Picture 1 (tube, each protein chain N blue to C red):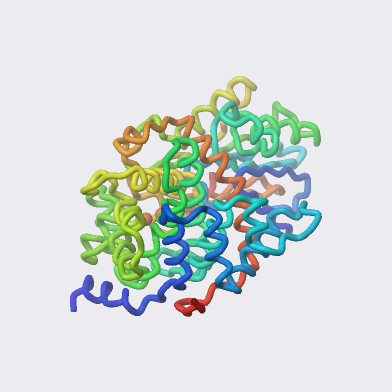
Picture 2 (picture 1 turned 30 degrees about the horizontal axis):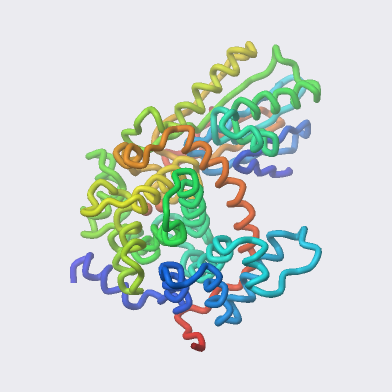
Length: 293
Length: 159
Ligand SMILES: [Fe+2]
Ligand SMILES: [Fe+2]
């Protein structure tokens, strides 16, 4: 097996996401379902329900009476917030492990992913882009490929870095040249294996190269811009540092200017702290475990 | 020794010689230190954005998020503790960018540009700087000596 085949063979042994994640995404994209149905889906899973309620109560200590049902939490905090917390808590355990190849300590990839997700959310609101829930999820998972490719990067880092230094190419291009596949493509294969919606798979696959996507969507551009800004602003660096490119075309397609970008940064940094604190003592969702129907 | 970690959008000042200030992962953000070597008073800020006009209410809650509100606040605090403007030594690091970055979205470059303006307006010289590149930097600043160490993937050096 060459390196690429070895890497790709790891995908099937990578932990699957709890089925709840697919169910939530399905509810989100089903036009027949009202937003209140997200709450119903969450209620199927007692552990997830407990996490969301814990988050709701710790987020707003100001509540005189604790929130004790999902529908009440949705009423007070909004369905969007409930969805974000629920999907984040399902993905959390896949992202919080340290990734040595990229020098990402425990929780580093999680923090970066959360920053990109919240930044995407802020950009969706500022630019009035639809599908913000799916885009949030794609943003949360955009670097998931690093969790699998990390050990290979570890073994080939010097090769990757010297290629970047000598040819002035970006990190993901060097990954691809050295190992036959980069973390973005690998992440897309993982999400395909999870049977995730195409919109999310696309966000992951093209997050460093939106201009190469055969079908460029606002979702792809939003995640690319959010990732680029998060890299700039230092939300969770690894060894790859800032060795990536920000597509001007992507910015032009979305009509963003420096004001919008800086506004999104200022909004994200505040919510990021809140949500990070909420997750500090959040029990991880059980990987791959079936929940009762 | 007390280790004071300066978070993103945060600043602190100290008069205690045993204090050491650290700030991590400066990308386009700028870490700035200001030090009075006679009074042995120093402070550090880690700001993210150049101008507060885009979100004045955020600047009220977190002045250190922006250069134009954070840097003056840091200097004011140092002066009120007894630091003298004529003796103040200011150094800055950070302001990185992505590869081949377009000027419009270059937050790092804008962060540094605004800083120079603020210091110039206040008649303060920038003694040393280590800005730009596609690297992330970590700073370590000793109140006792005013020594500032910049650490990155390229190694560690005193600024
Ligand atoms: Fe990436
Ligand atoms: Fe990323």
